[in-house]
View (spheres, helix red, strand yellow):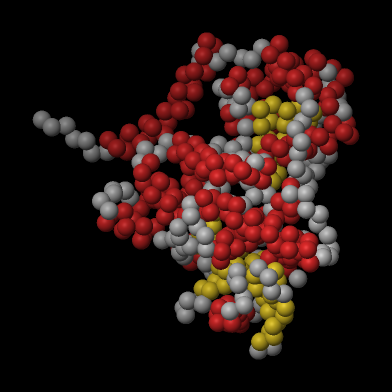
Length: 468
């Protein structure tokens, strides 16, 4: 009699999901497979770091209070290779200068010798630290735990440190340590900072361009040239420092983000579908899962819509791709709208042959709004008239932003301003901004002022000034 296989795929999937947990329990049951790091080794790691000169660091435009008395971990989250480790080093330099080098310890858990540890190993590390520096036992100290997700039950150790008044910084690659995961595992006892690739201001600092209030014509021309480079190649720190190798660096970042942060992390078996999805997203300004599913079906590639939704979520969770929803005061309607697509860095768009200056500029503005932690959506009415970004504050619309690379063409500019005016009427918002490459002026139409602002000026404004 033939045996029924109904339900087998479900049990197979459940086994796949639970296997890592059972494997970890098995390994932790046998000391042979879970050898703790010796105190001697911990002492070597701690003392080596205290003797180490930190690398030269390009300062980031980010203020993090390392003197905090709040008993919360400070987590640095963001995409791979955006500079989380170097942000830690920047903070460590400040602490060393003010409190002395022995008050701060940094551990990188990506090192092979520190793989497979548990919270018990971390407790032994701290015990070793106090044996080396007994006078610090009752003093304020700082721990920097890089790639902490590689340690089993790290939350147990961090919470105990916070209870003792130790200031703890944690970071991790987006493949393992996303903000929502930290919030869950830490029970809300953390403050998160997003680390993105360099902003334009940080890019200028890295290029040793002096930022001023006023510029000569020659300085302004140099500024525009630098902006074109930033617009095209993005702000990953390595691509700025090693500009000759930036194409190879960008390709490596792309491959690593897709493979390690998505395919490997989520144990995706159908790599072909994932890569087709990624390619389609890269080449889309807005994206419909339903249409993409039909395309795959027409090509003879089998998958389900649910799988495609999951894959898209994985890309979003890895900080690789962002989905911007259409504005609606109804959460359900907003979530059901077709999203617009933005990437974490313009260099990745250029790497894949995207040369549309308008799209590159819009992507750049989107990323800056993310850095400024604005709540944003896009607007589109039944006549297909669209505004790129709506800045929301509660139930109010604070600002309407249109992005247009070249406003010298009157027909193009007219189309952009018409959409702004329609949205202004609908949302009763008079704060209208048209960000472009070169033009600066105010245009009055039907009693409403539209500000034209060159993108470089907008990028260098403070968060508060940008809303004025």
